[in-house]
Length: 232
Image 1: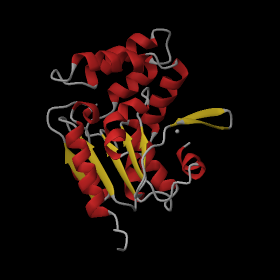
Image 2: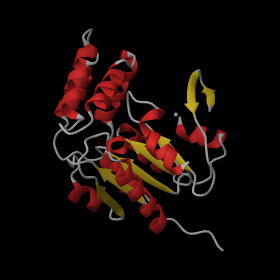
Image 3: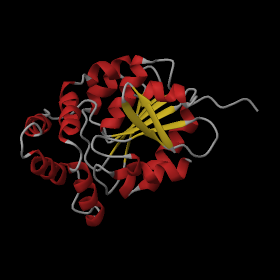
Image 4: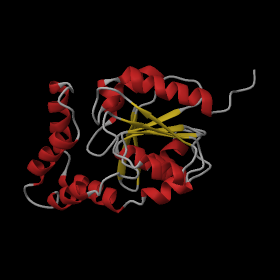
């Protein structure tokens, strides 16, 4: 583990394990690498530059929430970089207008931004059956993110053109939804016909933590059928 600095921004990374294909795990807004702990253990961020510094060749980009959008955008901007993209609980093409996110984006620029963030996270990101202790910890961690970071992250989420990114994606693409599907899948599959969709059972937005066995199994199978196998 360690830090790399680019243009005054410190990027934390943790590297472990070996084998192909390499996996680059990208957490969501207000989160950190620990929110991919089950996947990190199972499979043993300026992402393109970080890949270059770490000498990662054709990694599979696995992003949660906003991290999935970052992964997809990275695949579009640098088409020769990733071998595949996995977006976990990412609203690439929301099925409903993003009014809640737009309202949150505005509230995050006010003095009472932490209360607004907590209210949104508690209401929008969890199921009643999700682990309450984990929920409380995640909400407090996300709400503790500096105001300028949260405000910028959600403003860019509102402005991001997911339809254009999905249309331009040329690499294998897996989208994993939680119990509530937030994307317009029919439209998304018309834009990106090679998209593969999976849905976990009994978990909210943080399904990679709540039901890691389901998420890990989907990723493993997707990689097995989507990426070329090395010559024997």
